[in-house]
Length: 302
Length: 120
Image (cartoon, rainbow over all chains, first blue to last red; front, side):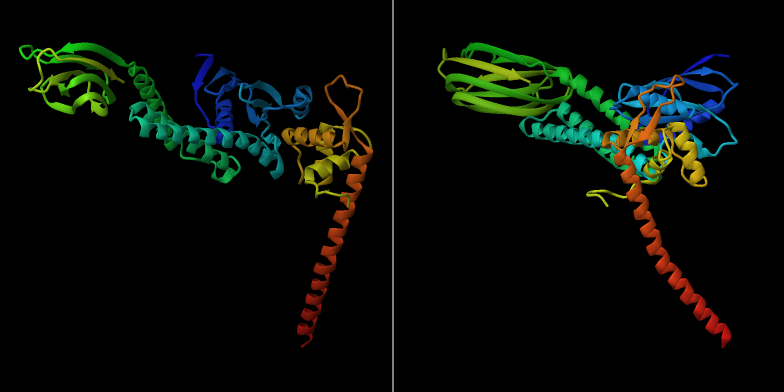
């Protein structure tokens, strides 16, 4: 039989009572906590003891020695603490003692004090997330892109979950958010983050500048651009010429997706949704143009 | 009652009370509070650390300078803490007396009415 067990489980702060219950149940089955982490915990095998656990959230302990001593006095052994301010204690289980023996906060005031230490921080983080969501949404007005949609959703979901959690940690009776829905939330956030990363790297930008002299015997000038991922792309065109020109974006089947045209100094910007593949940006002089007319063209895709 | 004083929580009250007769350590306070309250008030370690820390800050109690080898820290009441406890005890007696005068008066009345009904 194995002597070590690694358990990957993430409990949001407001589920700390459930985490304690799970740790106690594992201890009853002979798995004793060695190190409790935010994402994963380590257990060792020992069937000769049973422990009861306590989790305390306290980021600013003014007197760490007095803190540990105060717990040690009542039989609490320190297990470990986490980087984000949680302290884990255990006490040998004695079934003859009342269950209150294993509570570290024994009056409503101190239970609420611990909850508000956490929720104060959560309100700040949740609000920051919502501000980020709003900023990403505003960015969409300037330029449609999948990364901004993904990030806006991630920030919105995280912000709402954290703010709901900040309220829930204060009320033990409603602390149980359905585990399944929370898992779904995290799964969606993870997928969106991955999407955001992929699409964030996608926008490297391509620029093409060229001088093009009109010759009716030659086919129109084209610039081929390749699109790696489906997304919204913006094509920016700057044309300096005396003639009338028409610029079209076509896919490989020849379907025209976008047309920009005009005479003289053309400045145009179009956003379009493109699927992966190759596209042609074609510059066509108007038929009545004098042969030999020149033009400077600059294209930028992002 | 002194300016800005608020009712103490039971934990605060019992901690001060358990230091009234002399220095005591956290575990001693916990046992004595359980005894005095006939098992109703149990002060867990987290509550104890928070309450003692707060009261040290407020200057109601202090840690005795001698550090005991068995890691048990002794606390003692300061003069301010003593005053706070006495004022709180007076306030509670006052509350209890007010409650008695109303509730007992009501019960006497109820008894009398009951007596009259029985007499009829």
